[in-house]
Length: 116
Length: 113
Image (tube, rainbow over all chains, first blue to last red; front, side):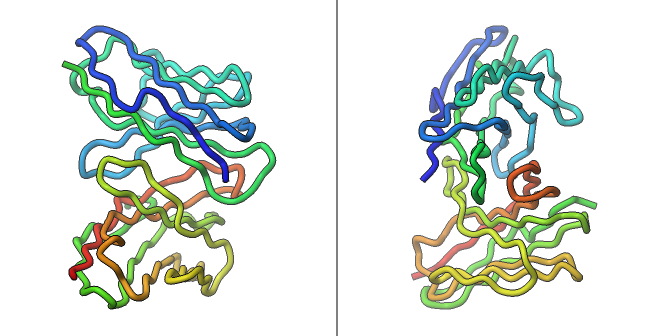
């Protein structure tokens, strides 16, 4: 089945630094990838929709200058959390839609970000 | 009103029983409905999807969709302790391959041995 690889699995960074999270579709091409954030005991909140070759579409309330998304190829999307602060600590998860179609959305394994 | 609503639980059932998880959604234009299971600290894994009114069965799982009532449910037969997890209902506004997913808050299921 479709596999989405997400790295790193966890990261600890100092406040004010930037962190890049990668999301790769390993055995399929994806024109669209989604980035979610999940705080403890809460559900997944969609942050943005990433489209290959174009600008990402951000959900209301998500700062596009803080959460930079790049989708330069059909197999790779990256999320960069810039000038991270402790309140950005969360579980970040990507998901991908296969270009070829199919049912369901494949999720990456998630990245646990802790900002200290 | 939230777009996708679930009872957060916890829902506790004994081993071997049927667990019934419910979800309502607000957008009548929604076309695709998904159930995901999420273990603590892990990302969601797809259990089932359903597009048409009625029931869809896959092993111990049955998804039920009623678009008129804007209601989707998941039944888990012969519940096992390993089924203990948070179950997320997700709705897509577009077709299955174009729309973003909106998640409910999830229902925590506890299956007691």
